Length: 216
Image (cartoon, rainbow, N blue to C red; front, side, top):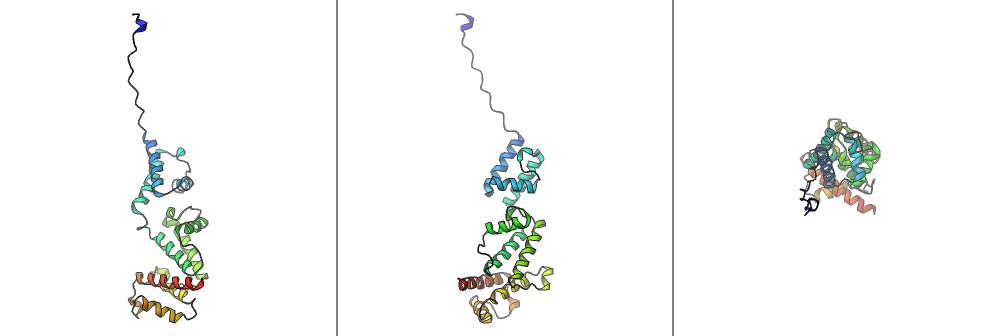
């Protein structure tokens, strides 16, 4: 047999090179966005907001790491330690109970946030940019009849709630009767000083539901 006819020995298959650190980070970012429900356009908006670069292809390894840390941070902690998010939602719901907006959901709030700040969604809003949104919502509520007391400058959450309660109750033909009937229905004592913030929130919801039902 000619040497040219010897069967060639099988060459070992080359394993595909493992994804480098940069590729792994990019894949991790995409996975985190899927987990958080962030689509492609929203992801680019987030990248521009957080990193200053819209495309991952133009980010350094360090910037990709910062982006991933931001996404994982928001997933792990949620909104429980982001009081400005809860504040904005509460103000928006107050507008809903007063009949000023028709949709109390996050999508509608995010649309308002984007008009105010250019940030595409409420969940991307940090506390440094939230102040302008909160003040805009308070101004809107003031136009709807909410009288904010001076004590709000000190961050008095109870005073805020009472201001909203008074505005909602004031929309009824007999505010005092409606207010007292709703208060008794919730089992609240006569003394306002004894009401907790949660009980005040319940009172806002009950009065708001009645007002919206009466307006339909």
